[in-house]
Length: 400
Image (cartoon, rainbow, N blue to C red; front, side):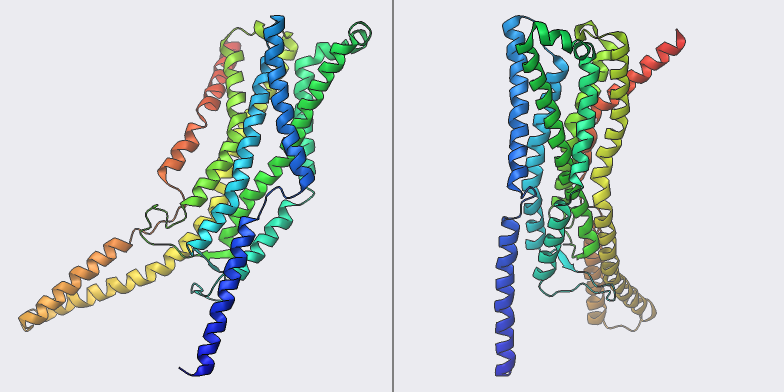
């Protein structure tokens, strides 16, 4: 090897090492919620929701009055949602880092059928920049207003009678009124922030989906995770479902409660109660569909990329099968004339090729395990029971 070629290889190795360090740094410092203002609002929503839950519980204990169960349960769900979302945001860059370290992400080239084996630092850095641009989109505000609308509607349903008497309360009990209004405002504010966070969660799902379109996956055959090394994607998609699960469980549990138990505890008029039940039923089905969509939709492009990688590996398996066929035909046509040593060698080659074919033919094409599906369906048990109780109640109303 010439000195020029050796120097070129050394320079290339140095550049690869520098780029690798840059990728490590970029992934270690990648934050879904990068804005300090949004992080402050996120923490404020978490603290205010915790304060609301503690206030309602303490107030019920101190005054011996019935606890406002819907606000308390909703507040607990919002707390879980924000905590799970924060866990998802921390898990996302770690997942990308794991995939990169396992050397699974390769440059996508539409004009080539081969998987590029060159270092992939620059495409990943560009991918992270595009992801940051999408996450920071102003569209998150629209999601925030959607949360604002839902929370305002729920407050109206729960406190319609109380809201209509605000003028009289303002004269007779101004201090309790101001406190109550503050608590409702904090509840609506928390929902607004949760709507913005929902955009960040959606961005994570879209980014996972973009992996399959921007990279070709170098599947690791017989990887211990059973998914070709891609099980971290299944784990991340399951965390997306967990962010939605608290709302599903809340709505399902409330439908079970209002359809099967004593609802006089809610102290609501029948018209308002019926509106609340209808709202819960309207929200439940979209949330169930959403929980399955946010698990499977990001995985579709990953599966397509895995199928493409499998097709490339199938070419190698076809080559093995052709060699097996060629040796088998040689044994068949020359069985009487083959020397013993040659026949033994051919039989050993056939056995080796068959073992190799059987070992590598089970190429994974899904980035999740059965345990992921089990946990996905387990999170839907209470919502489906809620749907069932609503359907039974509907049948009973028809038969009256």
